[in-house]
Length: 100
Image (cartoon, rainbow, N blue to C red; front, side, top):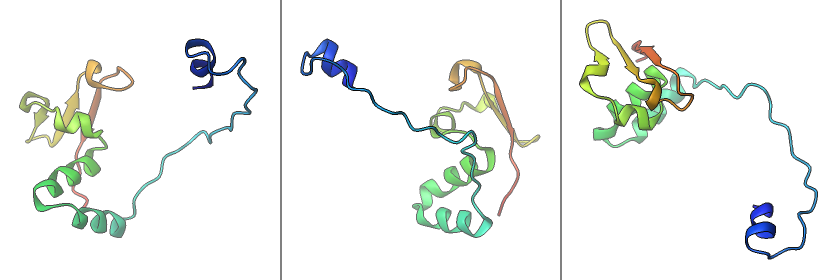
């Protein structure tokens, strides 16, 4: 933002040095079973199953809402997204497990 303010908008003469904070390598956190149940209960009924599916598969909201039936195998209980749908541009396959 400071670069834009300086170069594009001319609001400041130069960009001041800013110390960047480091992020931890892993940002993975898991909901405990009771936390997941409490979360699902907060959703309106028409969204609760989608939220449960999202938790069970680990897919992002955009991937869940953009799934096509040909990307879901109900018998094998798995779903997949194509590389062009993934944030990392890699194919993702998730085997859904019932968590409740």
